[in-house]
Image (cartoon, rainbow, N blue to C red; front, side, top):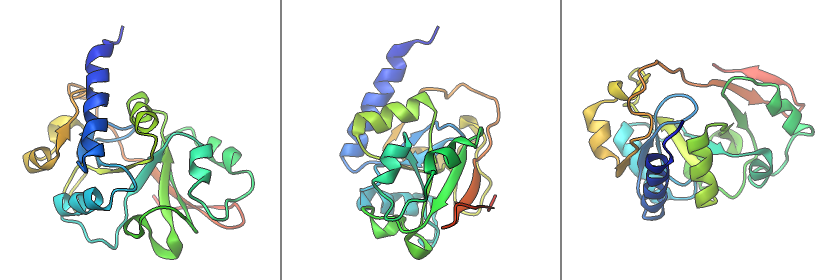
Length: 192
């Protein structure tokens, strides 16, 4: 049986931290990530600094469902929900013509990379804060992703404003999500 108290304490502390322009280090449906609310440019800038990452490379945005995603797409492809449902493993999808998000999160053609998360912790954060959240691997740019909490560099740990305790003891290696691009005609192009 899951002990709900530590889970709930971490959710509350993450929400409080993100609402105060902070950066969290948290478990996702894939690997551990650095995150903040997707509308907070100050916190997004801090994540770029922590990762020592070039701003040409944008971050993944986690959302809870297609309804939330549709708010951020100017011209969504027909049958979007069915397209997303075809992926059984965690998959990040790149969409063009995004709206209502800071330029710092946009790629070429106003594209955004979004993953609809099924992870209970991530979903709790997004629902509680009522906003999508940024997710980027908890590593320095160009270095291998940490496959579990124990592999996260101490400088990354100390740079986060809040480090989640939930799932820190898991030792099973996790993988980053697949990445695909959704084209205007509804076809899928595999990126990773």
